[in-house]
Length: 143
Image 1 (cartoon, rainbow, N blue to C red):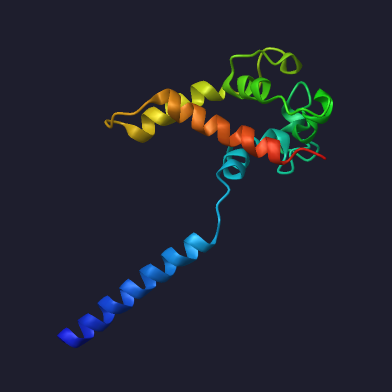
Image 2: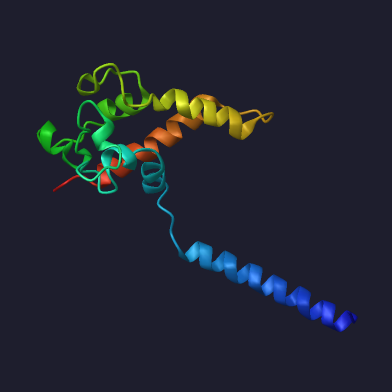
């Protein structure tokens, strides 16, 4: 392969890389929605209403409609309560003996797997993931 051909291929590779990076930046990623779809949608459905959730039939008690949390709380989104339920510190009576995963523990394990030998703050990792979910749930509330 000639040096001119090699330069052309190198330039083409750089242009493709920059084009892909620019395209990725144009497309906004909703990390809260991504977190929700990965961990919550199987029980609460993609739309948060829980009616079409794939795991619904396997649960002893039907999952909660996550789009009416504020409505059921006199129009105020219960941020602390939602955070505690996701984290696992608060008991969820509707689930009986805690069918809902304790995400605080799950995220701690994921942090350890992700960072392996790098220094990190596991609580910051857990809080970030839970707050992404809380923010997303706030944004899908019925008006």
